[in-house]
Length: 110
Image (tube, rainbow, N blue to C red; front, side, top):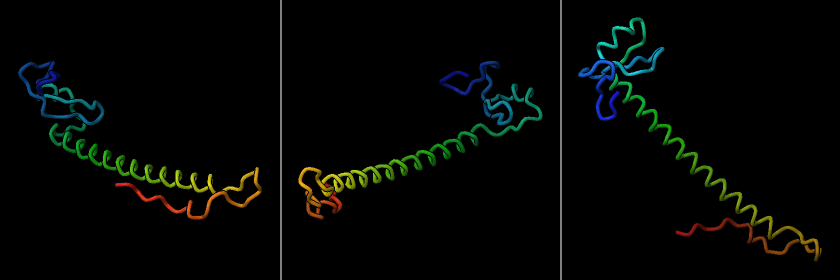
């Protein structure tokens, strides 16, 4: 297939307008279609639209997961800070080196 057009490499001048979903998973022109009898054939435009939609949905899900992970990292950083400053010191035998206010969630800077 030519990168700049939908022209079939096997049949010059023929445009690829079909897609063999099963078993070949390849774009087809009308001439190529003849050798794919019994295969699951769909419109190339339809397949492209479905794949674009699927990829868009996947990208949205990954973005949401990225935000969730970022929030979890921030929570763990806050807990680490809280534990660091509220743990008893082995040197001075005190119960805490910092007031409980150190455990309060940090405000995000805008």
